Amino acid sequence: MESQELKNSTLTEIVSQNYVYASILYYFGIRFFDYSEETLCDVCKKKGIDVQRVIQELSDPSGEELDVNKVSSFPVDLLIEFLKHSHYNFAKKKLPYLANLIDSLEGKGEKYGAIERDLKVVFPMFVEDFIHHIYLEEDTFFKYVIKLYKAVSGRSTPGRIFYEMKKYSVTDFAAEHDIHDDEMEGIRKITKDYEVLDDTPLQIRVVYSELSSFESELIQHAKVENNILFPKALGLENEARKMIDSISKYN
Image 1 (tube, one colour):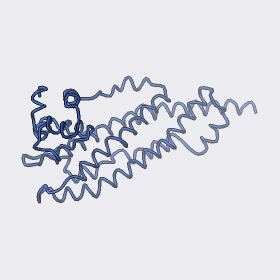
Image 2 (cartoon, rainbow, N blue to C red; image 1 turned 90 degrees about the vertical axis):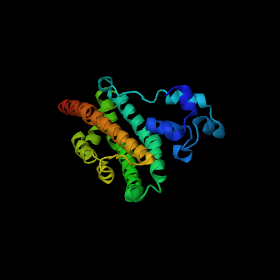
Image 3 (tube, rainbow, N blue to C red; image 1 turned 45 degrees about the horizontal axis):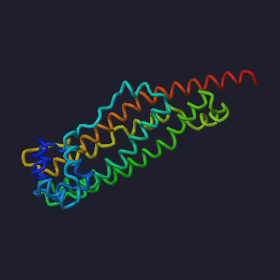
């Protein structure tokens, strides 16, 4: 859509063109389904928002693609900061937006009534479990890997990592991580793999699109952890073990 066309289109027309527009509007404080038949210009005037700023964001909704090759070259400490930043975006931006979308679903007819009810029960449980998982990962696995990194790079004493390696192992963390790799299986079943039919309401379409997009991000995130972080962490653990074995020979 051109700038003038966006300005004079209803929010329903705008979101129907690209479901990602719904999230952009949301971050400006506009829930599209609350103003579905009003124009973007009128809604922005009502809420005191600069319509040109909104149009600028709507004109470039793609976002950056994850460059796996670039990420794989990161040292371990920077890689973990990258993953923690992803966790922050999931917990503070993506999940609250999805929760708001799902909580606002109502009156979508008999066909989608059961899906609405199931999502409203299952999604909060998914969020609670997911948040617990990422915070636990940061407090245990990430901290352990940073300690390995510091020990191998000579920034902490071997004695400290020796006791950490008595409690933890990268292999155990990897096995635990595999359990959480398909966290959205239940949501896929409820939505029949985000199935969209000719009569699927727009708000349901947006919810499905955002759930599918979020799942894709989780898959990419898991690949970075499984294919990049875990091998690096295992290498550090092996180096730390050799270092400790070398020191013990002289005692």
